[in-house]
Length: 187
Figure (tube, rainbow, N blue to C red):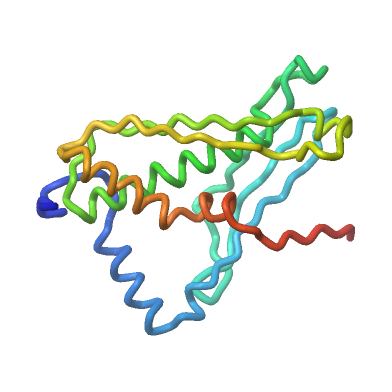
Protein backbone atom coordinates (compact mmCIF):
# COMPACT_ATOMS: atom_id res chain seq x y z
CA UNK A 1 0.00 0.00 0.00
CA UNK A 2 1.14 3.51 -0.67
CA UNK A 3 0.08 6.41 1.47
CA UNK A 4 0.06 10.13 0.77
CA UNK A 5 1.91 12.58 2.98
CA UNK A 6 -0.25 12.99 6.13
CA UNK A 7 0.58 16.71 6.15
CA UNK A 8 -1.24 17.08 2.82
CA UNK A 9 -4.53 15.66 4.12
CA UNK A 10 -6.77 17.20 6.76
CA UNK A 11 -9.04 14.90 8.72
CA UNK A 12 -8.84 17.19 11.75
CA UNK A 13 -6.53 14.92 13.78
CA UNK A 14 -3.18 16.12 15.10
CA UNK A 15 -1.28 12.87 14.65
CA UNK A 16 2.06 14.56 15.28
CA UNK A 17 0.90 15.35 18.82
CA UNK A 18 -0.38 11.80 19.28
CA UNK A 19 2.94 10.33 18.15
CA UNK A 20 4.70 12.80 20.46
CA UNK A 21 2.53 11.66 23.37
CA UNK A 22 3.42 8.07 22.63
CA UNK A 23 7.11 8.95 22.89
CA UNK A 24 6.54 10.79 26.17
CA UNK A 25 4.62 7.82 27.62
CA UNK A 26 7.52 5.53 26.68
CA UNK A 27 9.74 7.74 28.86
CA UNK A 28 7.17 8.00 31.72
CA UNK A 29 4.81 4.98 31.61
CA UNK A 30 3.04 5.99 34.85
CA UNK A 31 1.73 9.12 33.11
CA UNK A 32 -0.21 6.90 30.69
CA UNK A 33 -2.57 5.66 33.44
CA UNK A 34 -5.88 7.49 33.24
CA UNK A 35 -9.07 7.25 35.31
CA UNK A 36 -12.22 8.59 33.67
CA UNK A 37 -15.42 9.25 35.65
CA UNK A 38 -19.12 9.76 35.26
CA UNK A 39 -21.60 10.62 38.03
CA UNK A 40 -25.18 9.50 37.36
CA UNK A 41 -28.13 11.10 39.14
CA UNK A 42 -31.59 9.58 39.06
CA UNK A 43 -34.16 12.16 37.93
CA UNK A 44 -37.40 10.12 37.96
CA UNK A 45 -38.69 6.83 36.68
CA UNK A 46 -36.05 5.40 34.36
CA UNK A 47 -34.74 8.88 33.48
CA UNK A 48 -31.14 9.62 34.58
CA UNK A 49 -28.54 12.31 33.96
CA UNK A 50 -24.80 11.60 33.83
CA UNK A 51 -22.31 14.39 34.41
CA UNK A 52 -18.80 14.04 33.02
CA UNK A 53 -16.16 16.57 34.03
CA UNK A 54 -12.65 16.03 35.26
CA UNK A 55 -10.47 12.94 35.08
CA UNK A 56 -7.11 11.74 36.33
CA UNK A 57 -4.28 11.52 33.81
CA UNK A 58 -0.68 12.52 33.20
CA UNK A 59 -0.07 11.90 36.90
CA UNK A 60 -2.57 14.47 38.18
CA UNK A 61 -6.19 15.57 38.23
CA UNK A 62 -7.29 17.14 34.92
CA UNK A 63 -10.11 19.68 34.45
CA UNK A 64 -12.17 19.66 31.27
CA UNK A 65 -12.97 22.96 29.53
CA UNK A 66 -16.63 22.24 30.24
CA UNK A 67 -18.81 19.67 31.93
CA UNK A 68 -20.77 17.28 29.71
CA UNK A 69 -24.16 15.72 30.34
CA UNK A 70 -25.54 12.48 28.95
CA UNK A 71 -29.17 11.61 29.68
CA UNK A 72 -30.74 8.18 29.48
CA UNK A 73 -34.28 6.83 29.65
CA UNK A 74 -36.36 4.02 28.22
CA UNK A 75 -38.85 4.14 25.35
CA UNK A 76 -42.62 4.35 25.72
CA UNK A 77 -42.99 0.64 24.87
CA UNK A 78 -41.45 -0.01 28.32
CA UNK A 79 -43.93 2.35 30.02
CA UNK A 80 -41.34 5.12 30.24
CA UNK A 81 -41.30 8.74 29.04
CA UNK A 82 -38.76 8.25 26.19
CA UNK A 83 -36.82 11.45 27.01
CA UNK A 84 -33.40 10.11 26.01
CA UNK A 85 -31.66 7.03 24.54
CA UNK A 86 -31.46 3.83 26.55
CA UNK A 87 -28.16 2.95 28.25
CA UNK A 88 -27.52 0.13 25.73
CA UNK A 89 -28.01 2.62 22.88
CA UNK A 90 -25.43 4.88 24.53
CA UNK A 91 -23.02 1.92 24.57
CA UNK A 92 -23.60 1.47 20.82
CA UNK A 93 -23.00 5.19 20.28
CA UNK A 94 -19.78 4.95 22.31
CA UNK A 95 -18.57 2.07 20.14
CA UNK A 96 -19.42 3.93 16.93
CA UNK A 97 -17.73 7.11 18.19
CA UNK A 98 -14.58 5.31 19.28
CA UNK A 99 -14.21 3.38 16.03
CA UNK A 100 -14.98 6.41 13.86
CA UNK A 101 -12.60 8.71 15.76
CA UNK A 102 -9.90 6.06 15.50
CA UNK A 103 -10.60 5.71 11.79
CA UNK A 104 -9.99 9.45 11.29
CA UNK A 105 -6.75 9.31 13.29
CA UNK A 106 -5.41 6.30 11.39
CA UNK A 107 -6.41 7.84 8.05
CA UNK A 108 -4.62 11.09 8.96
CA UNK A 109 -1.50 9.20 10.04
CA UNK A 110 -1.50 7.20 6.80
CA UNK A 111 -2.12 10.25 4.63
CA UNK A 112 -5.60 9.20 3.53
CA UNK A 113 -8.12 11.99 3.05
CA UNK A 114 -11.61 11.15 4.30
CA UNK A 115 -14.56 12.77 2.58
CA UNK A 116 -17.14 11.07 4.78
CA UNK A 117 -17.34 8.24 7.28
CA UNK A 118 -20.36 6.75 9.01
CA UNK A 119 -20.60 3.81 11.38
CA UNK A 120 -24.01 2.17 11.62
CA UNK A 121 -24.20 0.05 14.76
CA UNK A 122 -26.91 -2.43 15.77
CA UNK A 123 -27.14 -4.53 18.90
CA UNK A 124 -29.53 -7.39 19.68
CA UNK A 125 -31.03 -7.80 23.17
CA UNK A 126 -33.71 -10.25 24.27
CA UNK A 127 -35.45 -8.32 27.08
CA UNK A 128 -36.67 -11.56 28.66
CA UNK A 129 -33.29 -11.61 30.41
CA UNK A 130 -33.61 -8.05 31.74
CA UNK A 131 -37.17 -8.74 32.92
CA UNK A 132 -36.05 -11.88 34.77
CA UNK A 133 -38.27 -14.13 32.68
CA UNK A 134 -35.55 -16.60 31.73
CA UNK A 135 -32.28 -16.95 33.67
CA UNK A 136 -30.64 -18.53 30.60
CA UNK A 137 -31.04 -15.33 28.56
CA UNK A 138 -28.34 -12.77 29.24
CA UNK A 139 -29.22 -9.18 30.10
CA UNK A 140 -26.84 -7.63 27.59
CA UNK A 141 -26.28 -7.73 23.88
CA UNK A 142 -26.17 -11.15 22.26
CA UNK A 143 -24.65 -9.63 19.11
CA UNK A 144 -23.40 -6.26 17.86
CA UNK A 145 -22.88 -5.39 14.21
CA UNK A 146 -20.88 -2.40 12.92
CA UNK A 147 -21.09 -1.39 9.26
CA UNK A 148 -18.95 1.43 7.91
CA UNK A 149 -19.80 3.64 4.96
CA UNK A 150 -16.55 5.40 4.02
CA UNK A 151 -15.72 7.72 1.15
CA UNK A 152 -11.96 8.38 1.01
CA UNK A 153 -9.06 8.83 -1.33
CA UNK A 154 -8.05 5.20 -0.84
CA UNK A 155 -8.48 1.73 -2.28
CA UNK A 156 -10.91 -0.79 -0.79
CA UNK A 157 -7.94 -2.63 0.74
CA UNK A 158 -6.63 0.58 2.33
CA UNK A 159 -10.08 1.39 3.75
CA UNK A 160 -10.37 -2.14 5.15
CA UNK A 161 -6.94 -1.68 6.76
CA UNK A 162 -8.07 1.64 8.31
CA UNK A 163 -11.10 -0.05 9.86
CA UNK A 164 -9.02 -2.99 11.09
CA UNK A 165 -6.47 -0.69 12.76
CA UNK A 166 -9.19 1.43 14.32
CA UNK A 167 -10.82 -1.71 15.72
CA UNK A 168 -7.44 -2.94 17.00
CA UNK A 169 -6.83 0.29 18.96
CA UNK A 170 -10.41 1.06 20.10
CA UNK A 171 -10.87 1.23 23.87
CA UNK A 172 -14.64 0.68 23.59
CA UNK A 173 -14.25 -2.31 21.26
CA UNK A 174 -11.85 -3.78 23.81
CA UNK A 175 -14.27 -3.09 26.69
CA UNK A 176 -17.08 -4.87 24.85
CA UNK A 177 -15.07 -7.86 23.66
CA UNK A 178 -12.92 -8.62 26.71
CA UNK A 179 -13.85 -9.22 30.33
CA UNK A 180 -13.51 -6.11 32.49
CA UNK A 181 -13.47 -6.14 36.29
CA UNK A 182 -16.49 -4.11 37.43
CA UNK A 183 -16.99 -3.47 41.15
CA UNK A 184 -20.29 -2.10 42.48
CA UNK A 185 -20.59 -0.83 46.06
CA UNK A 186 -22.92 1.24 48.22
CA UNK A 187 -21.54 4.24 50.16
